[in-house]
Amino acid sequence: MSTGKTQLVTFRLGDDHFAADIFSVERVLRHAKPRPVPDLPPWMEGVLDYQGRVIPVIDLRARFGVDGERPEGARILVCKAGDDWIAMTVDAVQEVTTVDDTQIEPAPPLFRGLTREYLTGMVRRDAGVLVVLNVRHLLTSQERLQLERAVDAKAGQ
Image (cartoon, rainbow, N blue to C red; front, side, top):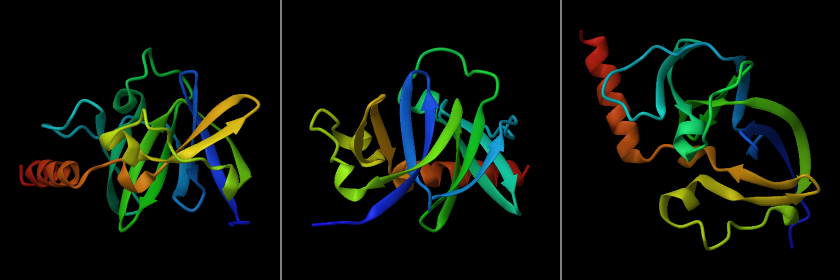
């Protein structure tokens, strides 16, 4: 039985609340338009230069099918995803919270396939459910290759 604790950075997309392990989140930045790269999926905003690294920027609203416009004051979370770096555009960063590991429930069966891979689990809170993302799996290996080829092609122009 686990008695550990996990710190989570919580953020909002529309009316939904999400979180990522604090050890995955490197920095929170004000939203700035990323450099566009051709031939990327519509949910990929482009890339940004962060401390000498070219980092892909995922629009989580588009990736997860959240309707509506991005609000003013959006933020970019720069995250370490294994050996890679990615950035995620979110509507707002809310807080850092600590939860007992036993509070993180596995994703329910209705989440299937790739969508389930995004999730570490869910935490029930008074304000509703907090969806905990697995930052490492927000990009598939095929998507990483596609991004790498697109960035290389743009650099060669």
